[in-house]
Length: 462
Image (cartoon, rainbow, N blue to C red):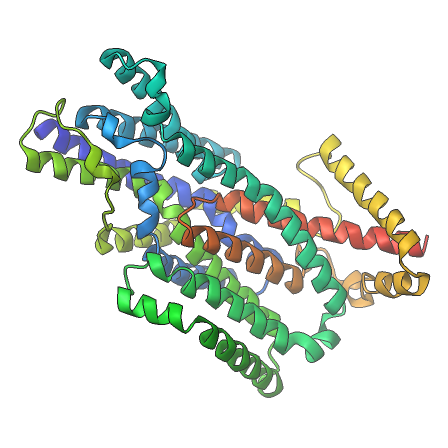
């Protein structure tokens, strides 16, 4: 008993360390758009993100099932074996994430967790199968094969979906707003902002209500029954509020969208990724509690009970959120990782840390080919009209490099909007999506949309 109690203490100590190194790497996911567009002071951005993290942590309870039964079948493991797997996973995760943080490279904490659990469970499962005489025919039962394939496929499919959706939404948004944001915001800014805020509310609050520890079943059911009423009222309300603020306070509506988007993406991050840092330790605690109540030897106690639905205590979620916020404010490595992603996704020329490779050149070549092909189907007058909307304003050209943001507010808004929607949707379906892959590929997609626009411009006005 004493040995395993010490192991639980070790697991939670490792969880705190994992929270620190994990947030240091993943902070880039929800900070880069606000930092890159210079929407507000760094302090203001951190305050907004901190509030999102604290609220999002309460939506993470349902995701904890992934660590308990998403990758392997606990019914084939005894308590002593499963604790070895959990300890190996936590140690590996910390070493791997801190290594990437030191290099200033973003990596996926979700992919790390999934494959660490898969690797640990696979080796332990092999030993169990050999010991019990199961042979290879029980492999697909020991490892939760169908669930693991779904999770892994979802993670890597999200890379392509994020890139494509980000490119399409950014291209349409640029056609509507152009680079002359001041004039076009007066026409469409309130409606765009109202639509963006409503979309965020729908996916974060309505779709995420099922996983929250702050909302009971009756309240959740009421939200589900009145979804479209809430959506319509929200769209009208926020469009009017933004328009009034534009007239009265002369605010830039996109700043509201970017700050709210930062809040929502931080909330989506905490809801989806908290399992990556504390899920294994929480699973270890639940395992210990069920074993201690059984009075059986650790080697004889079957862990089938882990497959049952168990709510994660609210205090653990809140305490984890507080640690994440403290890390966000104090850890210098997170800013190093942020600098890497912001520099990669900026829309102007500059010194590049990474050189172009055959994949990026191939994508640009495809964009040029698509642009030339489109010329044969689209009337010349239409092509010229569209291409003019990708011409940068004179003010932008005269802005000094020091004061110039890495990308403008319309692109920052699209980055945040698309990323938070995809992540929140995955959380509502209890799918552990890689927030790093999603936010990074959305940023690359919006950058690629700029390439498409410039290709159109060059083809029409060579």
